[in-house]
Amino acid sequence: MILPTYVLAVDQGTTSTRAIVFDHNGRVVASDQREHAQILPRPGWVEHDPMEIWENTRLVIGGALAEANLDASAIAAVGITNQRETTVVWDRTTGLPIANAIVWQDTRTQRLCDELAGEEGLQRYAAQTGLPLATYFAGPKIRWLLDHVDGARARADAGDLLFGTMDTWVVWNLTGGPGRGLHLTDVTNASRTLLMDLRTLTWDARLCAALGVPMAMVPEIRSSSEVYGRCGPGILDGTAVAGILGDQQAATFGQACLERGSAKNTYGTGNFMLLNTGTEIVPSSNGLLTTVCYRLGDAPAVYALEGSVAVTGSLVQWLRDNLGLIASAPEIETLARTVADNGGTYVVPAFSGLFAPHWRPDARGVIVGLTRFVNRGHIARAALEATAYQSLDVLEAMNADSGVALTELKVDGGMTANETLMQFQADLLGVDVIRPVVAETTALGAAYAAGLAVGYWAGTDDIVANWGEAKRWRPAMDAETRERLRRGWDKAVARTLDWVDEDVENA
Image 1 (cartoon, rainbow, N blue to C red):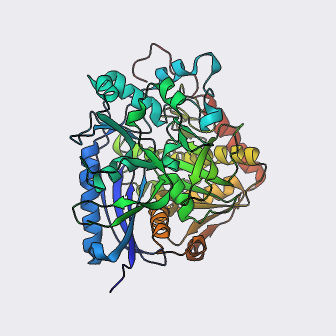
Image 2: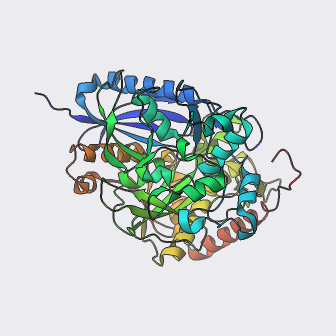
Image 3: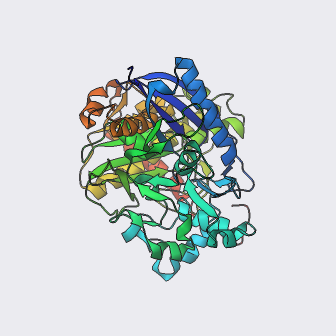
């Protein structure tokens, strides 16, 4: 008998869906990727079509297997990773969504969050959930759909509707859909809903009631690494579905940040920095989130502090698609290199408010410091630097919460290919920035979770052994320059605040 020799990961991201086949060394064997539409019906609203995403998921799985000339018999297990807070509600009988998915960046629930906060403020549920009341999280998005889609509330109360973040949607369809699909999520995704108690790792009935979410809608919470079930009819029929991790937790796992005090920063649509705090739940006093990092089988959950930045890579997309400053994303570095510095210009991309550590939904994006001297190159450079400045804000908050100053930072994601950005990041942080050999750490983390569950990898020591350093950037900026630049950034951030008034419709 020939044993399966690979693990497949589905990475359902904000802008695209990928399927990647990994070997035992954690190296990419084959992959396929498809973008999906970004639906923007109003300022601040961001939606995805769940049916398009499911169709693309099927196509990329087939594409990756075809590229490697493999079939289901060669796949030991499937792991899922996903854009975490994006919310889908669908009919359990037909499998059809009641509306487009509301994406994590979407800000339409701000007034609802303010109402829920009441006199107790945005930290009202933080002791239980580790999260502030913010538009970022899934719970208020469920409530919005139930309140605004005709007939949705009655259907939900009758038990006809299911909720899920994108992992749940993919797994439900992958395991057979209507009549047989598994309705479940893992602890990392559940911890991003404002509905799960961090200590018990269960749905809190009082939180669900407060947010108006019927318990019949929510999926079963499972660990991040266990055999949940088998794929239904299709190209992977019978293959074990055995790992689920939210994308940032998956990247942390794929980066082998398995020890307390280890950290990574992912540079994607947004930036997300996670610090492993071990089995201890560390509340933040500095604007960070307390979240579940992972849970392997029946072992105790491992927790993390997280700094979430909404707009980094998507700022480059905005310069390309909305302003036409560049024709393709890689051109941003070429353009930035035409100038020696930012020319006194700062870009603060608070398109949906400021996320960690500020949590200011009233903020909106600004470009400041403009003079006649400033040209396209300066704006391109300032846009890249915005990513590094936002990461600096998060790192300082993380150091304050943990009481431990990081000595180096592991990085991953598409923007780490940008040498100019990575060097500037090291300069600003004053610590080494390290990129691994395998850049697809998010998908790799999901693959590891699935492979561990079926014995493909013997244990986490295999994950540590597979990790390898590809590139290291060392800080080269003097302290005086660093302080001057940081002072300019802080002034620029201050200019973004208090922009949105209650009567402003297009904000």
